[in-house]
Image (cartoon, rainbow, N blue to C red):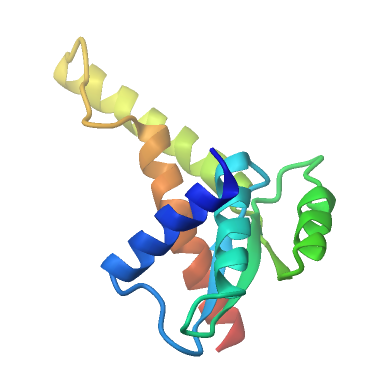
Length: 145
């Protein structure tokens, strides 16, 4: 997809849903993947001509896993240029511990009730991942407040 087409689609969505107002500072969660970096770039480019002036910043939540390197994302943000921040957490270890605990509870429940199968609308990993950012934001509020 060409940049002009992407910007057109982003602008249409922004205007349709009233997503940006004058003076907004928009934090875009970036992982280093193509989707989040494309969104960051598109919003930065949009900010250069959009009638409502706004700023875009990139944020990366470091989950605390070993060998995590945010330097490539930092360089990408500098090249745009946009402000870049990293939120350092140990949430990865917490998620792994929580996953193990929940798996043990589920195994005990299945044995107690002689269940042979268990079905979820989405799996336990997805549930935990969906709740990671909520937890991180709560922790950030608690440490900054």
